[in-house]
Amino acid sequence: MSEQEAIKLWKKLGVGLAIMHFSCGGDSMNDTEWELQDVDGDEIDDNIDSSELIGYLDSIVYNRVSFYEASDGHYMGEFGTVDVELVEDSEHIDDIYLSFCKNAKSEWEESILSETELVLTEDEANYIKEFVSDINGGEDEFTNFNYKKDFIKTDEMDALEQSIATKVDGFTSVFQPEDSNDLREFYTYESDCEFNGNSLIINMTNFDYVTTDSEDY
Image 1: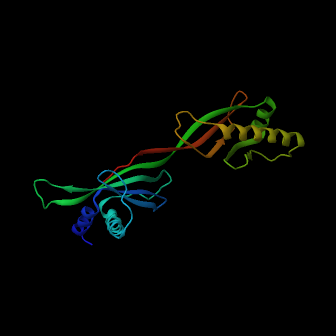
Image 2: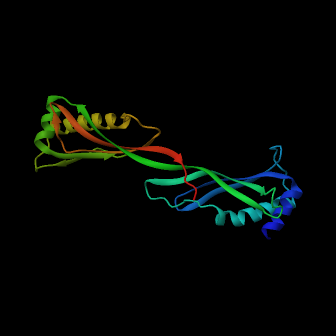
């Protein structure tokens, strides 16, 4: 079908606006859906002509509009609509064409780094200072202790370590950085076992979900 044939169908159906709802990301186009509205904004019922027109629009939209589906771990994708309208030049009656305009939001995952402090007992702090070189973990992970030397762990030491792990897990799971928008559940943390008094310094990495206006080239 040519564009002029599509325009004839457009006028026959009395279309005022065609809307493509879309989302893309993860290196692929995801769901797309077309809607035809008449000049009053009411949806046009499905029929052979409307299906044929939508088929044409769907075949050329990717040549008229740029979609950014390639994710990179920071950029996640975009979602929104493409509005298609019939443009008629009143001075040049033969200059009639379909105009495509994307209105979309881009999705981003921003990492937020925070230096935090967790208050421990003196015995817990002394255990870490003497035996532990670093601590790390994250969502759905057990707190991992890496030791600075070989030693025989007594029942008392094991109880101290379990107490520290419980405190670290509880603290990091509820921590929320300032100026976040829509935090994702996933997070990681690590500590080089530096202290401020008996407060363990923990470096948190949280991930925030952010949307911005998409650029349309």
